Length: 150
Image (tube, rainbow, N blue to C red; front, side, top):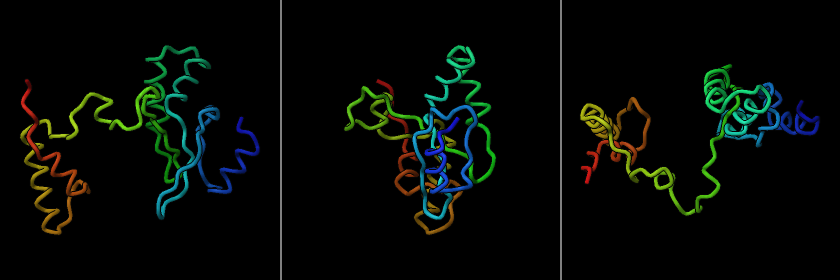
């Protein structure tokens, strides 16, 4: 059950914000975007931990249940957000790609994808509408060929 003070605080930001039943302990706050409703934010990892503790699921079962039934549930513009945090033991000056052990660029995985991103980059540079909505830098990075394995 959400404490009355927390419920009132959320309502001050957005009285129509939807809540995810049973995950009250995983609320971390609210999030705002320009011209969009303020939404409740949950810690995704904490939601999975709640399923494990409350429902006796294994971690794998809880992850699958959360992904399908909660994260995968779209109930309109007021649908809550779920935050995946960076690992706590990582220094704050490292990038997400370094933490995950990936290259700092994200090349396309196939030649077909690379060509598509290259075409999107051309449209973006010509001032035309793109299908991906990505920035020029993102498109440029995706259009690069993957580095050859060593």
